[in-house]
Length: 358
Image (cartoon, rainbow, N blue to C red; front, side, top):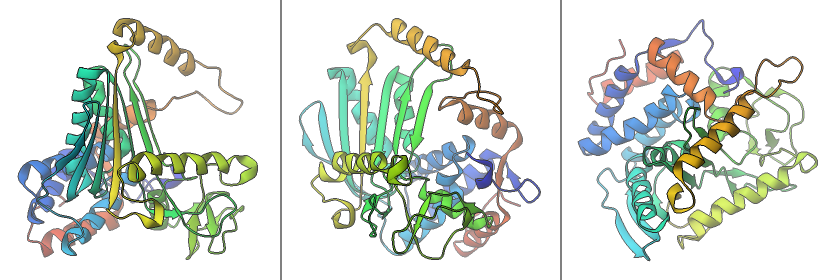
């Protein structure tokens, strides 16, 4: 994560991961979630915070979930149901459950089908936000499989050369096993920058880079400056000249493979909450696992040892920064903005929930 999104060191409040995990679990239980779902949901958020994916951890998302439960947008006790099953492919109605809780079992279903058929694909709809896409893809690594997940994000993005928000942020997560090297784990919004990172910038009075957002009339902001009061996100690439048509196309792909394939519309016309896509590839259905891991190690090592460009110190592939953040944060705690800690304390008091945040 770029330094401009990070909480300044001089104000950061470091919290032990287990203390925040327990606090979040207690909060979800107080909102009516069964114990197992509360534990699962907290695990997704803590995965993000421990691995440095601050945009999708407790800082931004927990307050949105609390509001969703309070206003009835999220069902605290959903009953997910398989509505279509062809063996390799499955579609699941998640009964308006929080994606953090209902998503992982659907990913696990894709993994089970991949054990039987070589690949497994599961689509979940009528669900809420499911956290970082990488969390779900990562579950496949325990089975020596390739995992993929994507989801319909908020409809905040204007198409290339457009002046309306018609596209979702639509992130993609991929996890690939390796041997001795750190696994390749990719997770990115198909917008020029993750929408939740704009919220991080607002919290620390940061500025947006050129090509990240457009003004309300659709004109890309091509000078660094404060987050404007009214704006739209731009597709990955920012402008047509530097490739935003590619991000535009990838956003459409995610929308098709999630919400449209589930039969629930697309973009501003979605009819059943968020839709999530989960896929697992059983490596041994295609090649020898040892050969695959050796080839991945050779490839990843080659990338890691790439000669750096002038003024740069090293090359890191997706997965390395998150592993390094995990090591550092497990030892020294997770740095939170004081406003986030204050919000947790206040919310826990309102809901009469015990917390471990001082």
